[in-house]
Image (tube, rainbow, N blue to C red; front, side):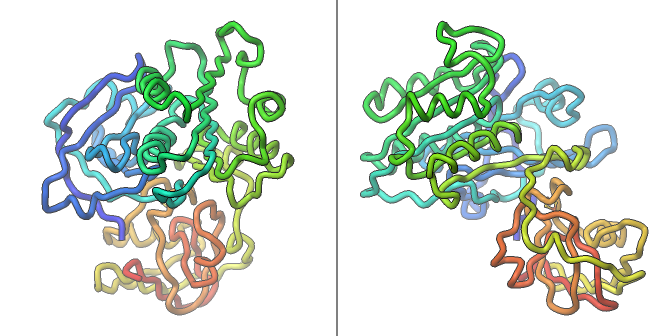
Length: 361
Ligand code: FES
């Protein structure tokens, strides 16, 4: 189970005017727990003006770099991102959750693949980790990156990307796409939308030779790129995307592919739910006041894990051992996990009088 640990900020590095990367010191005894795979993320937790704030950020480092580093881009009115960019200092302590996520494919030294990534803004963060890992672990694989930003000034990891290109000249192709600045070619001016993706596929890519695709950025870009690539014959299973959301984002902003489990209808007036966490059992009542199992468990004083509360991060995953629940939304669990009884407790409401959910399974 994902768990918070208090870590010290080892280094803060400005990446652009509005983005910092933060490295944490991981003590020797916690290193096994903080091992990660390229493309994963951590949830950071801190108290800002008495409010418990949690946000998930992708790790920009590759596992072989031996560093736990995330990038945090300042977003307008973003409580945590503003705090991280303006207040947080080296030596400060912060709760960091052990790494999670499955925005990756298995890398093998003798594999020869063509990886293609579409990223926009801070969506480059997990892609950096993936790109560096692919280049290190698979010497015969190639990587093509399409990276969208407002202008050249806002390109996060610009120099690192250039360095990778220079070191792996034959294996890396990078195409910057700028929306508010014409980089000299109309093809690379504008947003990464369906039209652009079509042009890229026609002029710069052979979709038959794409093995894995990684998409990370705003939802319209993810949809545009996946639609075009699927149309061109790239199998859906090879198109991977990372979607971030926060509790306050309207659900319309989320990816429209809710998975099985979101369709179960009907809830009971009041359900008695037994929550098992770290071997301890807590009995709670989940009523019709809109509370989900996670919120009810939090109100009862348990320390159940969560981050996004938006059906995306999977931090609140638990297994239903008895009874049934329905989920409002599910953007994280695979069908097979739902079939095995796993639910996102931040979206789960009891549909039977008695339910037992375990965070330990
Ligand atoms: S808290 Fe993120 S999916 Fe439930």
